[in-house]
Structure formats: C-alpha cells, structure tokens
Image (cartoon, rainbow, N blue to C red; front, side, top):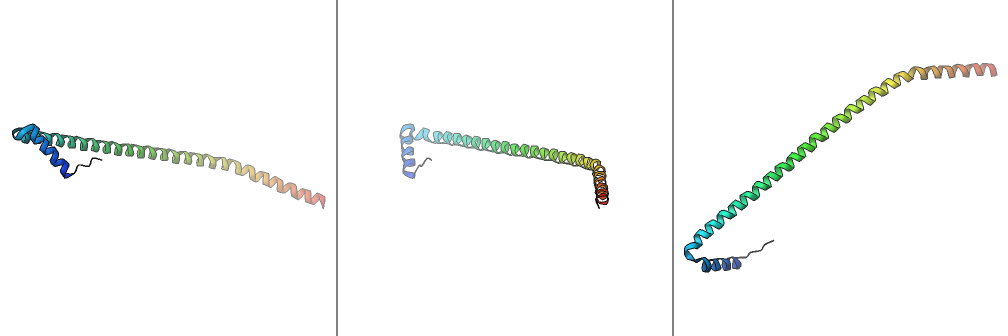
Length: 113
C-alpha cells in the first residue's frame, strides 16, 4: 500500500529538522509517537470488538439453528405418532377387506367350477 523506503524516511527527517529546529524536534517526535500509539490501540480495539461481535453472531446463528433442528425433530415425532395412529386405524379395515375379497374369490371359484 504505502512503500516508504529508507531514503524517503531520511528526507522527511531532514525536512522536519529544518522546519522545526533541533529544540522542538524531540518534542514533535514524542508527540507523533504518542499519536501513532493511540491510533494503533484504537485500531486494535475496534478490530477486537468487531471480531467479538462476529463471534457473537456465529453463536446466535448456531443457537437459532439448534432451535430449528429441535423443532423439526419434534414435528417429525408428531407426524410419526399420527401416522402410527392412522396405520393402527386402517389395519383392521384392510384385514377385513382382504378377508372379504378372499371369501368372494372362494365363493366365485366354487360357483364357477
């Protein structure tokens, strides 16, 4: 992004020495260092906070997904229970129909023979 080489850094220091003078240059460098330190701490603080929020979003999403899975499992159990009840109700009717069909076939075979 920014490519500052050693010769460019020396040039900036030389210009600062000429503009500020030898008395104010150490104070200016110290102040500049403090500003860079604050900027760096602010950057890392914001970065940490964003990473923390992203982590919280992942946790919330995971909890939501787990709740959905539990709801799906509960609905599957409800459907299975209802299907078992319907099957239990239909089985006697199916047996009766099968029995009636078998009886009709026997009667038809006896009458036709």
